[in-house]
Length: 323
View 1 (cartoon, one colour):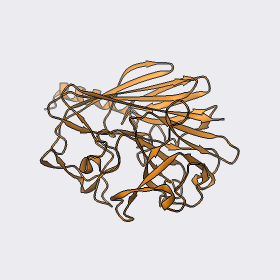
View 2 (view 1 turned 135 degrees about the vertical axis):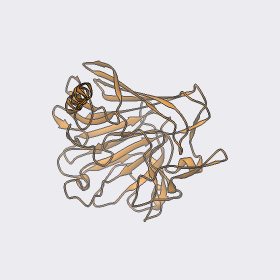
View 3 (view 1 turned 90 degrees about the horizontal axis):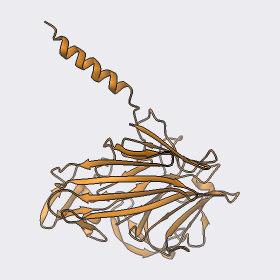
View 4 (view 1 turned 30 degrees about the horizontal axis):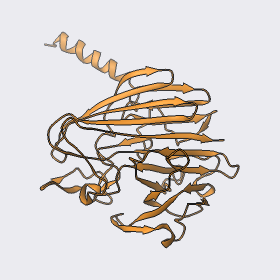
């Protein structure tokens, strides 16, 4: 015999699920010429425009987010080599999420459904909780604010250790910046970084920090056209721009483009030219990822934050048009 209560409940659940976009709840904010769309899955920056011009590579509301586009990366950015790390004397194994290289990539929150806590015309706040797991046995409460004003989109991420133990932690965003017409090859990058992290060619395992002048094409301090240069490296020792923030600018031939700035708590920045086998995605945008720590920081301990119970960490960055 059919249970009518169960049938009704199943139908109700199916109906509610069908109304949610693939990318999760959709939140739109606007201010002056700026417009941003935030997806609930991963609290992802899905769209950012200025006077209708894309500042980041967008994706569709009913599309699974491709290539970490616009994602928040925590409790670590970039890679944990082999997914293993010594957690103050305890060996831990994280899920391998970069199968081709055998690493744990970009943290644990990028596929979580974040809840919208506040939403006004120019501001949205989302929150989620990361539950403890075998590889990361810590409970984190995470909150992100997206705010549009005259100076573009400001993002602030707050993490709180809501459990026990000293949680290793790092955070970064993953936007692919768009300067204008063309692709990465046609644009100029200005980044006042004195040093970069050398990595192996095959698995991108960190080898050591070097001056940017030691590698052809890696000195962007005065700005240079990217051309066909391949970059998937972290930069550091970035000189502060006026106002005390670090900054990267990506501009097209007409001088217009996009700039990203961030605070001193983000002392590393990953730059990736977005080389892909799919023609539609190949070098379509320049990934600029300000990070609190370098790749494999869970292993090296370099600039790694340790959050004790009840302790919190805040990081922020801004994306704005160059007009």
